[in-house]
Every structure is written in structure tokens, then in C-alpha cells.
Image (cartoon, rainbow, N blue to C red; front, side, top):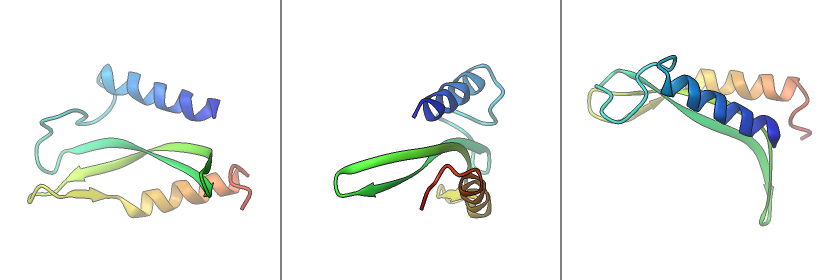
Length: 87
């Protein structure tokens, strides 16, 4: 869980000081924005978070949110290779 908190804090600071691309409200259509993704498991009401990563998004011309699914799959695979996800 500490790694997840560090990842979130690092992303927030990079975004706040301009290292993130297009972060914030009012990003123009097609401008990349960044969000986060958590990798974990849920059994009943118990949730265990194994890892986290930034997740590139973009706003399409029609205002829809576009997710880079290949990037998400790559991050999931890397998380599993590192042994972060025991399943």
C-alpha cells in the first residue's frame, strides 16, 4: 500500500509542477490528460491493492474519454511479472 501512496503523491507533484501533459480541468479536446489505475483484488468487502500506475487518457473531439487500453494491459502485465499480483 505504501508504494501506491508514493506513486499517487509522485504523480500529483509532477502534474502540479508541469511535468504532466494536459492535466487539469479545461484540457482541450484531444489533449492528453492523466489519471491513475489501481491493480488489486476484491473478495467480498475486502479489497487488497497490489500496485498502481498512471493511465494516459485523452478527450475525444466529441468530449468522450479515450483510454489507452494497450497501455493499461502493458502495465497490468508488468505488475504481474513483478509478482505484485499473486493471482
